[in-house]
Length: 238
Image (cartoon, rainbow, N blue to C red; front, side, top):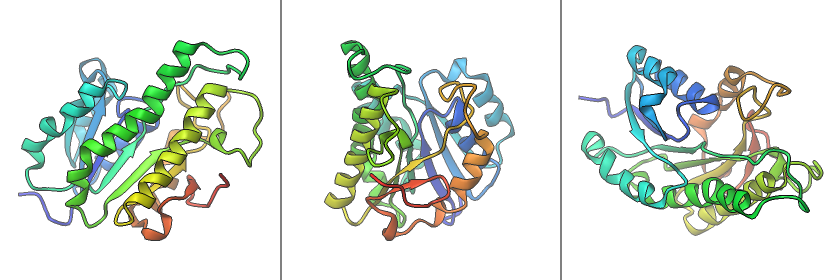
């Protein structure tokens, strides 16, 4: 029987990049229960390898965060193994980018797909999993954003649709925090990480980003809710 002291994590985009690194690290400890969600578990050999070596209770589920019906089906998919257990931490990691497009040069289809995955997906998933979060004493929603979402940091014209979507995600998180002050909802920039999305020019390794995040997120309290942080837990400007 699982320990009542275990923390239950639900993580999207779990088959690659930062999501995979987070699942890998959390799965190394029996104090965690990890639900790793990705679009194609069967085609994710790295995630399957984590499953073979995991010390934690690890469940892999299929989820495309750009598919509303798939999101609605998630509570049914996890209820049998969670039973009456909560979700303590929901980590909305899944995102997409159109690359370095600009405000006067982007495709409407790319813009809408980016908003669907980066904003509507996390919003709908939080709604779908709210009953599981409400069972928790933690009740934490971590929406993974980017420094590109900050107007104040004045990063410029690059990556327009991605930046717009992440700014919208920031506002979603603020609204979640203000509507439900009993939850702890915040946005975090993991840094410019060396992943497929981050590209070869990125500054830090996935391990460094995850180590920084896990140094403070498990102890995040109400003072974090509705705010924007870097991977070390330091406040960032909107």
